[in-house]
Amino acid sequence: MNPQANLIFIASLLLGTTITISSNHWITAWMGLEINTLAILPLISKSHHPRAIEAATKYFLTQAAASALVLFSSMTNAWCTGQWDITQLTHPTSCLILTSAVAMKLGLVPFHFWFPEVLQGSPLTTGLLLSTIMKLPPITLLYMTSPSLNPTLLTTLAIFSTALGGWMGLNQTQVRKILAFSSISHLGWMAIIIIYNPKLTLLNFYLYTMMTAAVFLTLNTIKVLKLSTLMTTWTKIPSLNAMLLLTLLSLAGLPPLTGFLPKWLIIQELTKQDMAPAAMLISLLSLLSLFFYLRLAYCTAITLPPHTTNHMKQWRTNKPTNITIAMLITMSIMLLPISPMIFAAI
Image (cartoon, rainbow, N blue to C red):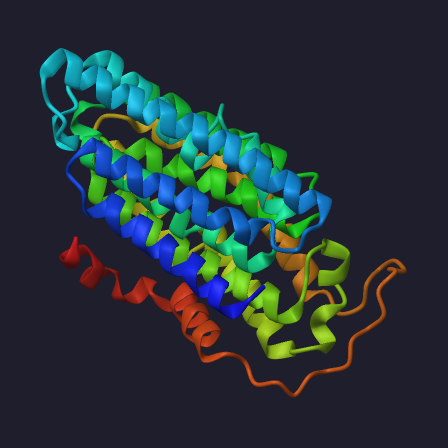
């Protein structure tokens, strides 16, 4: 793709995200979401492969439907209450429609079917944008409207997302699809706590973004798309491979790594809110996700594939690791000891 065109699309993405997260009127928030959707489409379909075109089409149709629902929700609220302010969403029907629209935007169950397919058809760098920066505007809308939302509905969506995200990732062999189901599972953890402690949702999102960025950029560096290829990458950059293993375990939420921090805080907050059964259920369901993270980590750590693969062993490269990847991996592994400072910040 032309570098100038690429720059325009990335700038439009940042502009759309900024407009949505800084607006307090529904129309400007909707405009930001539309700019985001239109800016990411060329980045998804830039390879001109039929699968990429299909992914872009699926993404466009889903996001257009979700944006229409956002507009419908805000108009219903304005009709009944006379308020266009995002924080004044008080009409029950509007809240219900908005929750469905944001769930569709994010890829929460039962509106999750588009996300693994779109991620599978996109390049790794675009997949990173779809999994991180594209989730920020809808989560911001949830954050601003959280006092009005239905707790039972959100808890149900969250538990089903964690369950299906873990369950459907078990038999996948494509790394991008596994990361898509991982994203759905993590979104379940964010959705369950947003009514009780919205700041925890944002903290979880920031840490998830950091760990996912580290994984995607590492996979992009070593050029891995399938588990069978992942088994033979240990010859390329052994140190980066070892760090990828730890980052995956951190994404799974194992102590003493960074990924354990948001899960620990969310379980603690749910228990304080007399929701111990929900906390126990979501913790047990996250074990499903742990299984496929361990599978990825095993394929990363393995040095001699147990069966013959169709991929030749790669020569070790002398290319130095990108400083961005090094910083992201370090933070993805080592932030737990400074958790008191993070508590003070939130």
